[in-house]
Length: 75
Image (cartoon, rainbow, N blue to C red; front, side, top):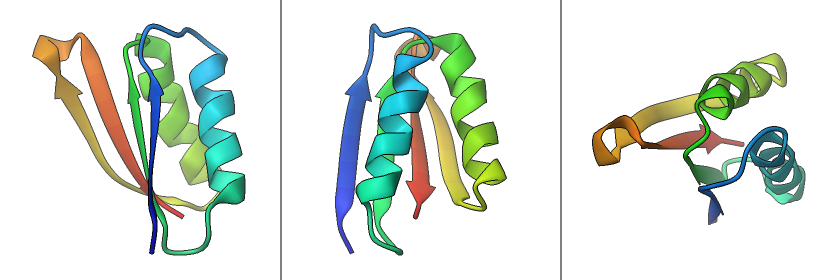
């Protein structure tokens, strides 16, 4: 199992979702993808897209008083 971290802080749609999809395509089953970002719309879009792809969203955590977020996805 590999852990892949994607930092898209400061980037807006659609970049965080595009980077997330790229990482998920490269990942092997069982890998953990961690996405760190700041864009509020992406915080909602990424989990919806992952669920649509049949992937497990393990955790969505707000950081820095809600200015940043971190989403953990199991491939």
